[in-house]
Image 1 (cartoon, rainbow, N blue to C red):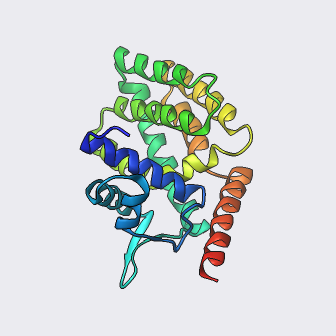
Image 2 (cartoon, rainbow, N blue to C red):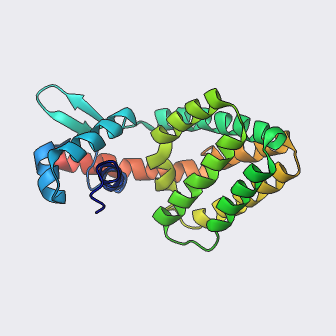
Length: 225
């Protein structure tokens, strides 16, 4: 691991987040700073920083006499979060189509192309995130960028989770292609429509996410038994 303090806590954040998303740390599991520090061979300080960030993302919560535990998210709550995220990204896209500079357009195109032929879900997600950030920044609305990035942190683990579904990476890349085309054409309404569909989880995508959450809940039940 990179021992630079800020980078170390970020790496630990990603590792613990991954353990939560995959169910290694299921809902209700206790996260002890000392145990985690021993597991990862680091001091408690970067562990504490990572846990604070996970708390801000609402992935973990502090409970009396138990300390940090992995939070549970209901399917209804998850759907609500994605509904809001879809509308906020649609707004970013609509503004980006009107306001993006030539440099910002090029950044969006480059971020999209970097995702091409990536098959690993986690590697794709990291590049996918850069694509969406480039799009947010092209809206040139600082308040909107702040708000959408805050919500992005909240839904991040679940967006990563859905990329594990069969063919989702290919579909995601193709959807990005249509979004980029609409931005370059300056068609704000089409960008908004395509982004809304891209982000919103419906039908099979939502069923896949719910199934993943149910598996985590089952793991929690086994943990508590």
